[in-house]
Length: 117
Image (cartoon, rainbow, N blue to C red):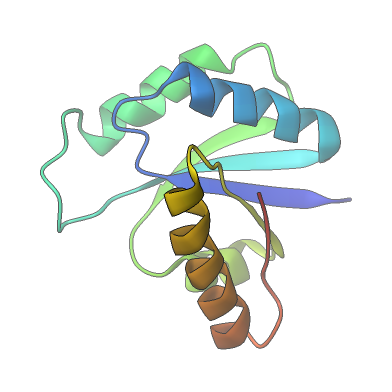
């Protein structure tokens, strides 16, 4: 079974997020949308509220699960035994940041975590 994680703050959940979720769900057998609890930011919605919003928005996608996590993505991915992370891009500046993050995650995970844009 091919599984992926789509991590993010999702604060707020956007149509862009939902588009990525639907497309990733059509590619992977199982997709876990993982709401990051980032204590460095002051969120608009609580983690619990974001999880509930995502659960409602994806209830028609049987292979999508909603979860939350704190800490490093590579630790969470290891815990879930998932080796693919999904990331969205809005602009070229997103790509530069996301590419650096993807390379760092790959290096820190010993090549166990691959990122799909």
